Image (cartoon, rainbow, N blue to C red):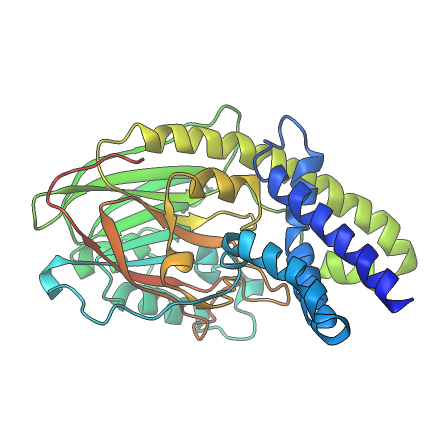
Length: 368
């Protein structure tokens, strides 16, 4: 009886894996159910791993099939768990490019965000300002000119001898700016934004910087459409039979809208990246899982920092949901020397990503 159950589950996991991987290539704006199937793929990966252990216990020869699936879909596993080690022979200091990307959650400027710690905004901005990175990509950025605490453009930029480019999503009634920001110790020689095909407060901005080698590097900062779900909604849906139906439908509708919006956005973004004549570094809040169409679209042409240099699970969301939605992608001839998720830094609901790159060639290169 147990073997029949295991055989059924093995067939199920195989079909689940095949369909789930296929759905990563289907734009949700053309077929939105693909977004949900791709999102479920980690479940298939875990189930297949459990089946491997159970077959080894029950009938070792039959364990060859789940083992083969792990081998064939190894690249799917490393999107969620890796064991890389830092480069043992880093390049000279002057050739390194150090990067920090961070969703700063408007520097906790709203009262409810710092109610338990009034010093939280000051502590966060000071930490970001004093970080030694050459390039800072900040999402959910906030700047209030003239304010002792929230004049972040001055504190992170001018006072630290960094040039800046701010992509404003909106300006409130007191003139405070919300949006994206890129700060650079390297000279900014060009800048701009990626236009989307429909109105949204989400953005992608970019700068071209001149490196000491005289090469030009293009740096993108992205904040794609939100997942639009909160932990409290998920908890309410799980804990209440009534909530499971009403909240579940609401969550599903919001997820569907996010899948569709991000699939449009990532296509515009990827087209812009492919037109670049310079090596590309893409940082930011993807708001999607590594098994998604959005991630796959970028991963087809760019390398991922966590996959290349991360260690462990690399969760970037500072909450109860174990997910990785913040990323750094890069093109050749950039090479990654080090990548870390700073999960000890808990100012916001995201962890910062810290990395070091080097440009392997003095010649400029476009994306593959």
